[in-house]
Image 1 (spheres, helix red, strand yellow):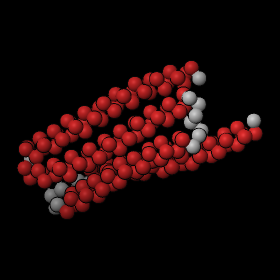
Image 2 (image 1 turned 180 degrees about the vertical axis):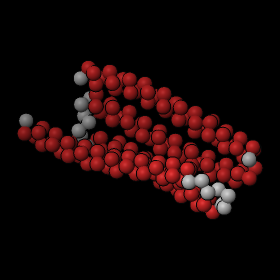
Image 3 (image 1 turned 30 degrees about the vertical axis):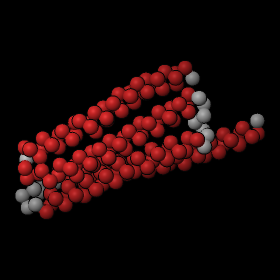
Image 4 (image 1 turned 90 degrees about the vertical axis):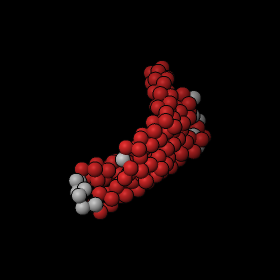
Length: 165
């Protein structure tokens, strides 16, 4: 258990750093980047606010996953991870990842439509990269659903064992 406590402590440090980076990106970096894009490329200025909203919502999903992971780590250190209390946090992770995946899917479709509707932009690189990211995101969502089912089974077995003992 000592190794677990050290790993949880290190993971918490990294989660704090990731959360701080996410907040900076959400409040300063991405809005500033899109404002600069609008100034430098006036023909793309109409994308400033939709891209800003998408970036902020995507980072909000990341922050939800970070907070939920923190709470689950607390349950791990207290040896309460196989309880029904964990399901709410795992559900929050599943829904946050699903929301981020839907944002990515929408952005990928919109980008692909835009690229292929413009005759001079026929490079398949960006749509293929976005399609790959959408596939990876879909795998991540479904993996979390399977892991949630495994947690439910483990919690059920744990409660059965506690009843026997």
